[in-house]
Length: 374
Ligand SMILES: [Zn+2]
Ligand SMILES: [Zn+2]
Image 1: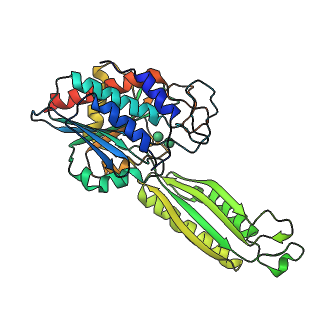
Image 2: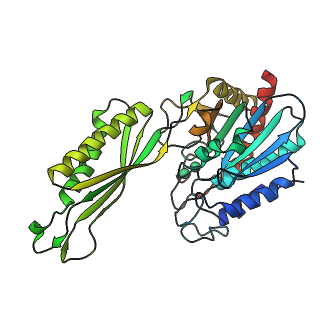
Image 3: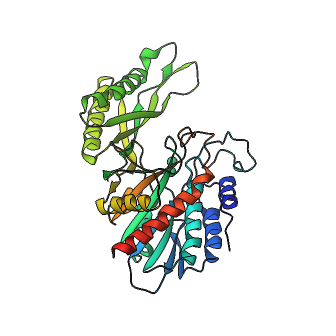
């Protein structure tokens, strides 16, 4: 049978689920996969993750491909017929497209004459960095033992269908910081009777903006949230929260930033007699691409006359695919979604269906290229 991939993509787009809650998405994928009779479908890997194992019963490598299941807590501003049915949640990273590509790949695998085993992995909770780690640590995953793992991400800003690649570090590492400052509320007419953390809060935010300038490597701090006191005009604020994301290309630089941040918060809080707490959350390691896998992708792209672009610097965004490449030979690559396409996580972003076939074709060619090398 021929899958109507665009209908599948639109169905997924209409029915988004947040990280860790991808129950219906998972059920839908299992139903679709059954049409292609994989040898085994393993469910509930690291949450709602799924692995479909296609076994040729002929000797050969085990090649794994990964897509992500989750959508984002963003209200969709598009008004097209297949817009998100769920208020406040939508597929703004194109994971609906990535799932569709893997389902299209399942159909092709069924038709192609292949060796070894091919495993399609549908991973939950990418956006919160929890999913890949949980999958890798799940005993059901440990039994799969792939020789290679590959994944792609659609990338606005690049010509449709272009393969975007880099040897070594591909994406940044990042971590979130939560800072809580605690002073004392007082009457707004007598702020001197309390301890308002406003001044320490603004100093920390300002100095976070300067902190990366004193670091030689790539370093970035983005303030993502801040809150001071409560809405009560009669009360001087007694507490504050600041949240920010730290990014760099290596764990070493990230740790330098963290140390500087800790001493900065300590200094500002102590100077003002405030209690403080620091919590680190949502750590994403950097993705390190394996040289051989990058060569396989490059050769595969050339074989099918796909444009390929090598980037000089790693991307500043992150992806938890890094938990796989820490353990398995693999590579992550970009698939251009159009030079002027709306950016990922924008409220009017929508995955471009025209690149579904590009994604399937490059994955199929990667399989063939690996077999040629055996
Ligand atoms: Zn995303
Ligand atoms: Zn994504």
